Length: 383
Ligand SMILES: *Cc1c(COP(=O)(O)O)cnc(C)c1O
Image (cartoon, rainbow, N blue to C red):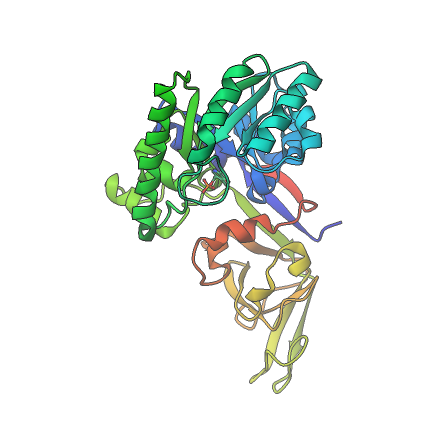
């Protein structure tokens, strides 16, 4: 049983998905990226909400996530796409269940063919090309064989898409690299056209590219972080606001993470709090014990740095974050009592703790901190 809980805001999901759909228009497919347990939001709670507000295409990173999406939606009108690794043993399952998957090298192509033959159904693949990320994808020297293979197995291999992934569209520092990737991908598309490939869905954009490089949208965008209410970086937010002559952040945070005060006490001056000697009381200090620690996803690096909200006040985490507990200085909120609501992420009265202000680190950390939220924490939907 977990000592904290997560709330997902339905109206925020609606707002964010509408934002994306409005941005990309009717002709581009919105693929809701729900890898990393829907960026910590919880696949089983998040996907039905996304479905309710119009998501019909879901991207995950492996077969177990694909299974979860399938389980919680079991609807005929959705498409599930695996972008990362699947063991060959799971390929057959994917084929049987009409789950689409990335193919990024020749062995995987062979395995897909075998799986299709075994399942007696075509494998629906997205051929991934290497364009400069230097991670996964077919490279130039493979193209000849790839084409031959695809053309000679039309019954078993259905190419649903061709794609690539950008290496950091959220930062202007990567501008040259990103535009080079775009050029390279375009050359690949032209090459395939010249070789009479009937071109399926073309896709390359994640959230950052969807906003900053509209030409990368092609037929489908793989949008993760934006649907949860975050711009990938501050830079992308500023870019968006500037371009749209807007002053307000159009997104709304979906997730809140809350717990309750476990105990309160006063520590006299001249004492250390918690393990070791990282926090010393210069004056008598009132503290609250919070039943959440790094095993619940509250990063240990927030020791003496994190902030929480209690009774509408922004309070400091003092001492080290323990495995299952941490301590907050409530000297400035001395009316705090046992059982009071503690907001670790989210709003309380006029205050808000965004994931990034967990600490002063850059927003890129959002991705990491969110996905550290354990699957077992209870998730509920609020308006
Ligand atoms: C995670 C991921 C995305 C989504 O990225 P966001 O920045 O969250 O929008 C898109 N494509 C691939 C291949 C990914 O791994």
